[in-house]
Each structure stands twice: as C-alpha cells, then as structure tokens.
Image 1 (spheres, rainbow, N blue to C red):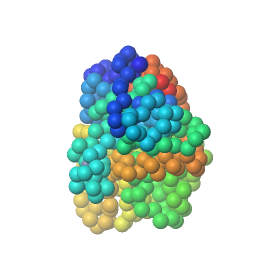
Image 2: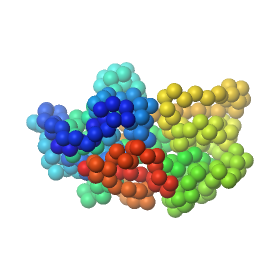
Image 3: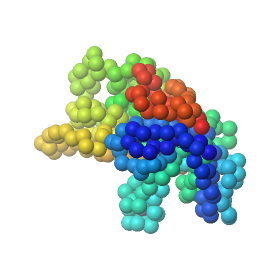
Image 4: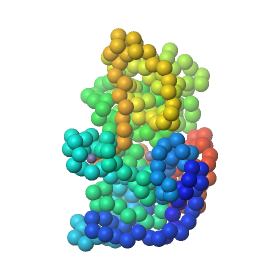
Length: 330
Ligand SMILES: [Zn+2]
Ligand SMILES: [Zn+2]
C-alpha cells in the first residue's frame, strides 16, 4: 500500500509499505479522509515529539476493510478513529483523565496513522458514524473532539460572552459549539478576512481584525476566551480581554519550547482561570454523533483536498491566505 512516511525531521516520503495484517482486537481501515493540522506541521518540523519513521495522520476515518476474529465491527462499516490509545487501567485513565495516561500512544504520532491507503487500528479506537455521512467530514471528528473538550472545560451554561482568538479549524469549530451552547455574544479575532467572513456565517456575532484594531481596546470583559491560535500575542491578549473571574481556555499549541512572561499579581487579583485543554479524552463518540447530526457547517471549512502525493507541498508551505482545512484522500 502507499503511505506518507516521516523518516526524519523535514524528511517526508510517499512510499510503498507493507499493508498491515489484522489481529484479534484490531481492524484494518481503508482511509477515506484524513485531515492535516498544525500538529502535523509541528511534527514535520521537529517541534512536537514523534516516532520516526512513522506514517503521519491522526484526524481520519474510513471504511472497515478487514476485522479480527470475534470482532463486533463489520466489513464495510464507515467509522471514525480516536487516534489516542490509552491503557484504560492506570489511575489517570480510571479517573477519566485519559489524555494523561503515561502509556498514551497516538496513531499518526507514535505509531502509523491515517495518511496512507490503510491503517491498522485497535478496536477500542473505533467509533461508527451515521450512514451516508460525507466522507470528508470524517476528518473533522478528531479536531471537533478536542474542541468539545475545551467546551467541557469552559462550562458554558448559556448567555455568556465568548471570545475566540484564532480563525483556524479549532477556532471556527469552537465558534459553532459556543453558538450551540447558547452564548449570547461570540467575538472571533483573526487576521484573515476570509476567516472572519466565514465566522460571521457560522455563528460569530462580531469579528475583529487584530491588524487594524487594538484587540484589548475593542474586546473586553469576556466571560470565556478560547485561545485557539497557539501564539504568544494571543495568549497575552486572552488574559487582558477576559473579565475578572473569567476563564481562558487554551487550545492553541505553540512550539514546545515557547515561553513568555506572565503577571502573577494579575492572575490573583482577577481570579483569572487559565485552563489548558489537551486532546480529546472521552469526547470522540460525542464528536462523531455531532458531525453525524448535521448541526455543524463543515463544508465551509474545507479548503483543499489532496492525494498522498500532495501532502509534502501542504506541509512545506504555511497555510495559504484564506485556507482553513486541508484534507487528504488517499
Ligand atoms: Zn490534529
Ligand atoms: Zn492509562
């Protein structure tokens, strides 16, 4: 089978590899769609740890090609895959904090993932989706599961003011989730006009261009701010625009060695809650159901669909102006 293999930092290859063999407790998935995200870029550039060589791709789904003996799944079923494999028995797993499992291994990071024609997947990671789902929507289920984790941590009850910093896929999914959660005001801050226009179509009540407006002047007193850009500037802004006693939910991923100054006095006197949100602990099933419900506008987020040979070019260049989500269809 063909696959995109990361041999070393900045060294990617479309190559022929052996198709994996199914064993008890696993299934072979024929990949229909796999998203490429910022994490893949970080891995490619060596800014996020991964095994090498490894087949990239952690945002994928497909159709079951082969099942192991005694499997509860059926050949031909269309499924979404939770890429994060955990032990299920350690204290963190038992407490539901599966993202912290010391044994966590991820498809597309530590073991072979979905930017390939086929991928071997443990049955524990498989979530069937609704019949007739647009296969491209499979690529959104994992990022949506991560966004739902952020929403869970934000504890929106309805009626809040919400700021979203960053207009990438996560930011634009959070806008839609905040709308579904009943936020009264949703302000999206992003430099790209195309993304601001998309945000207004899918639930943002206001958009701000940080190039032409001072964010900390025109956005203030937000109940909850979602930092979805993974940048130092937006991380700083998030603490200024959030009301006293409010929450900053940090979903954006910076490079692992990025540091910045923080003002502890301000954190104390403003009772600011700065809450990281990591991975998709126990949210993949909800994300698969929500995508199947058709309540989200996902088509508007798809910028380009490439084949395996097109992956290198996508990872070599920063996302083009106006582009939101790239999807690989092997
Ligand atoms: Zn991702
Ligand atoms: Zn565990």
